[in-house]
Image (cartoon, rainbow, N blue to C red):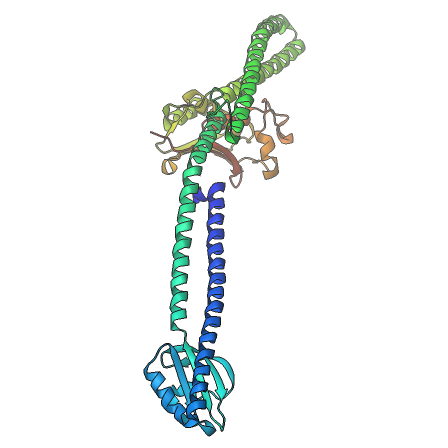
Length: 443
């Protein structure tokens, strides 16, 4: 229900249904008012005619004969109610409640048979004559009209909603196809295209699909060009870099007799190796962001355990300790990339924590949505600097003096995104907690 309400067309249909109901309500109110006014004019004419008939009666036979006439006409009821009172308001004939009216004019009064529209006039010599028209027929008509309008309104709303649903369901299906295409593109599938129903005479959704496809064609060409340039650059740079490394090695051997020169060559070699690592990391980042989404089931616990054991000697030799706590968990992904991301997180903790620090690695099953967590008790990262730490080549001021390319967390974040997961930085109280929350693995 909530998903349906998110659709603009559903909200528009609901507003249209409400507007239709209000229109029927207003129409019913106006119709009821018009019918009541017409009926009341007719009833007033009937009452005046009956009053005129009774006036003729007492003029010919005298006022004293009027109680007998009223009693007779009351027995032969034909839609009128009567009330007759003598001088001083004494009851003479008819309905006692109508006989109690002692003010000339029109009024609505409850009679024995129900509500009546009554007219009262004085009699010569004292007394009052009241003639009323039974309104029960009018009330039944109003109830019938209200029921008819309610039925018509319900039928109109049902017909409008059914028609709108049948006409918009096709639009919903096409929009769902567009959303599915966009989701595949977000997952790295640049080969998909949005479906077009009528390319010769496109509607607005076809126009959107065509524009999206043109954009995807352009992006695919640009990405392809970028990958070719990246491959060419990597190929062209590998050979001179390899030759440069060989020259540094020969220079290092030749400089062994000169300690100062040997130390300088060693520093040059270390800086060159850092350049190589940065270059390799940039290539890896580009390859991850351009690859297709993973589809194989992997044992996250086994991958994490293997990486932990591979890095444990380096971590413990540095004076830090590694603690691992793992639950059985399975995700859909790539073994090598998950291992690379975890290794980057552990190396980041190793690089930015002091000797004696504790590094904790946990794998949580998390109700079918596994979570990989690396926690340390080092200095941590301030909340306002965490976006910078995740950016490619982003290095915090405190870490500029330490080795590294600034791509470790960026690569781990790209690997997480590629797997449909989410990498988050948080306080470990003290220290830093880096977590990768994977989606539930589809079987």
